[in-house]
Length: 118
Image 1 (cartoon, rainbow, N blue to C red):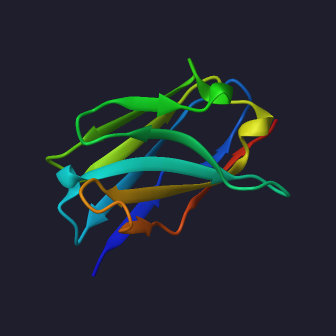
Image 2: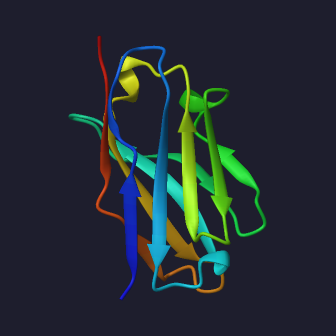
């Protein structure tokens, strides 16, 4: 059974930092491209950042320079370091895994809430 379990969300003041984690099980993690998506209140889900099996990264313009995605294949975990958080970063953040060899195979986590507010 495939599981993606996010953690690390919470309430933080503007300008603060959080690190999200997504622990995977039931997949060969190193063969999956991983991504973080978010959905804010009243908004559509959007890609925040993604990292390929080879370590290449891609970011939404709104988070470039503030967020960093990374992966630890030994721990089957992908991270999202979020710095200089803004109220508009408030959203439910979800982890996504896409099989690099079979792109139609994808899994989602349940999400973790991030609230940026003073």
